[in-house]
Length: 125
Ligand SMILES: Nc1ncnc2c1ncn2[C@@H]1O[C@H](COP(=O)(O)OP(=O)(O)OP(=O)(O)O)[C@@H](O)[C@H]1O
Image 1 (cartoon, rainbow, N blue to C red):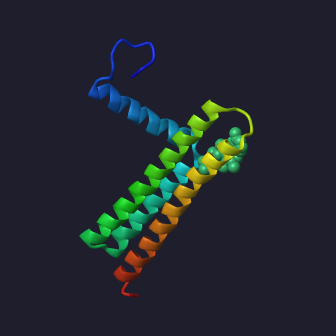
Image 2 (tube, rainbow, N blue to C red):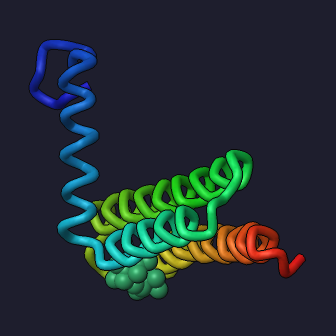
């Protein structure tokens, strides 16, 4: 629901517009998202160069999507915490640190998958 609006939900097209707006806001304001997008493009170019098979492509695409998804969730959680308090608070720190940890755990997992997929494609394993 939108505060001040008499409708319960925006239309499907409006919801999509808000989502695109959120994506561009994150790209404009969050350095980490940009780093991840660049790494995603580099991975796709490397995948084309080594000629990944369809299953490997699925793994790479899922990993890239999940890492960007996690960073977007982390960014949203940071905004919610900042909305809740502008002061230093141990719970605010805990929430932000754990949200950031979720991104790093997923990034590490994606990196391991990438190393395995590319090592296999290059005949190393
Ligand atoms: N209100 C707060 N109270 C206590 N600690 C805070 C608070 N806000 C931020 N911090 C600490 O500062 C760190 C960085 O917070 P910030 O909001 O700048 O995130 P960020 O640098 O944008 O994070 P990321 O790099 O994951 O996007 C948090 O992980 C937390 O340890």
